[in-house]
Amino acid sequence: MIITHLLNNIMLKRKRKQLLTKAIVGSFQDKLFCKQSSSITLMDGSTPDDIILGNKVWMWGSLNSQNGGKIIVGDYTQIGIGCKINAVDSITIGKYVTFAPNVTIDDNNNHPISPQFRKYMRIKGDVDSSLWKYSNHAPVIIEDNCWIGRNVSIMKGVTIGANSVIGANSVVTKNVPSNCIAVGNPAKIVKTGIDSTPAPINCQNYNEYLKQYTEYGTTK
Ligand SMILES: CC(C)(COP(=O)(O)OP(=O)(O)OC[C@H]1O[C@@H](n2cnc3c(N)ncnc32)[C@H](O)[C@@H]1OP(=O)(O)O)[C@@H](O)C(=O)NCCC(=O)NCCS
Image (cartoon, rainbow, N blue to C red):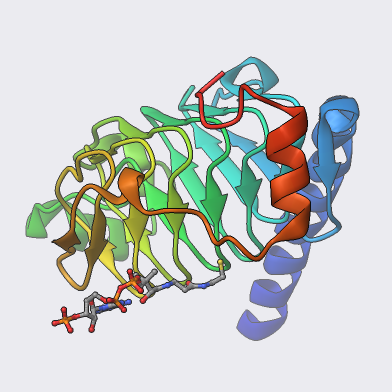
């Protein structure tokens, strides 16, 4: 009986989510290369206005907003499959950013630190008390042209500067300056000045592109 109830509940939630996904992703579709795996979920007062997507965004992942959390994604950014971007405050992502699969960005702790409050959540099963707004939260910023490796977690309050790279499986808890490579848990900087790394010389398409578009390399 309890299991049936639980299953029904999960299915109901799924159904609601799928409907929401269809409705909301549909309204963004002209701007997106939107894959079947993608979703946008608006919870507890969030509205479509809380999600701002640039042009030519490649969307494989999920954007989840609670209580008016803002999610802003710049032009030409790719949100990889399995990525989860969870905002109750704000998550701002620049242009040309590449997210490998399974990156998670949380601008909040999800649950409060207070042991008494968490015990209350479990005892009462109070859905409201589990909302992200009761946990510590701070805006996250990922600047233009970053590359975030697979399975990376980016925590609340972090800014990653333009062009920087985060190695696979890293956990980013502190700011990363521009033009760096940071890796590990917690992520530490292992290389700086990567803006002076030359592009590979053997990519014919890139060489042709350079000839045609002199503005390449700017953040326009
Ligand atoms: C970070 C990365 C780009 C490597 O950059 P690189 O300039 O070639 O750097 P190196 O291989 O010289 O590594 C520099 C140091 O960081 C370490 N390192 C590299 N990647 C690491 C990672 N993910 N976690 C922990 N340490 C890592 C190396 O062991 C090396 O340490 P050392 O100086 O003590 O020897 C690469 O390791 C990576 O993580 N790529 C992401 C791949 C991915 O997620 N692809 C998904 C498709 S987009």
